[in-house]
Image 1 (cartoon, rainbow, N blue to C red):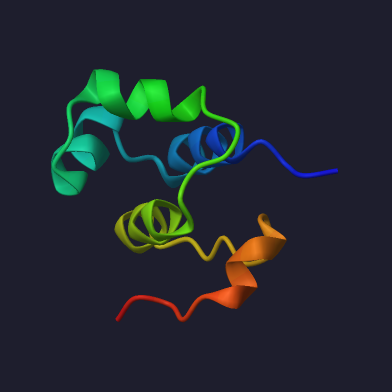
Image 2: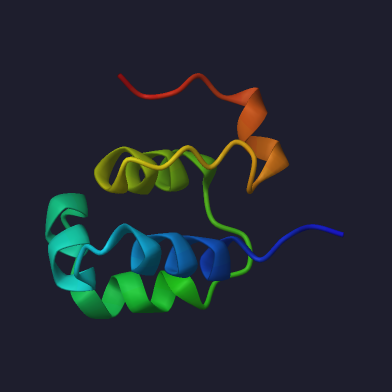
Length: 73
C-alpha cells in the first residue's frame, strides 16, 4: 500500500522543529498552500525532495518511490 505523502511530510516538518511558515517561505509558497499539500496523498517527488532539503531529512526510507530520484545538491 502506498503511503500518504502529505502526512509523511507534515510529520517530518513537525519533527524538524521548523515552523510551517518558514518552510513555506523557503519553498516559495504560502503557509496555507503547504498545509494543503499535507492533505494530498500523492505529491510530486521533486516537491518532496525540496522539503527534505529544507528540513534536512532524507525521505528515501519514508517514501520508497523516492529511490528513483537523485537527491538535490
